[in-house]
Length: 117
Image (tube, rainbow, N blue to C red; front, side):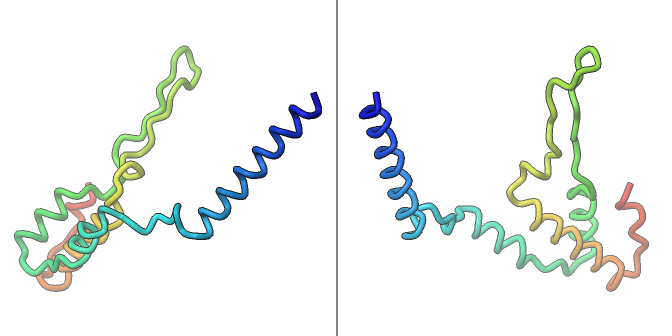
């Protein structure tokens, strides 16, 4: 039995060393982000007309929608996270909305309270 445990210990150690080596060499780095071009594009959109600014301010929500707890007989059985946590472009969209709102205030002199309803 000790030979069996020794074998598994050796396999675990070997697997751990291989994993550490792969991590050090960058095999698991998240360097390739296939959404990076879209992120860059969203970050470079210039809001320079009122119509576009109003559209973006209405289309991009001001808060994360749809966080829900599902309960059965008073017991939590499931939790649906806010949709923003599932959206890989959330930060860029929030930034775009902010730029649109700033344009409306700074360049058009509009009151933006209507976009926070």
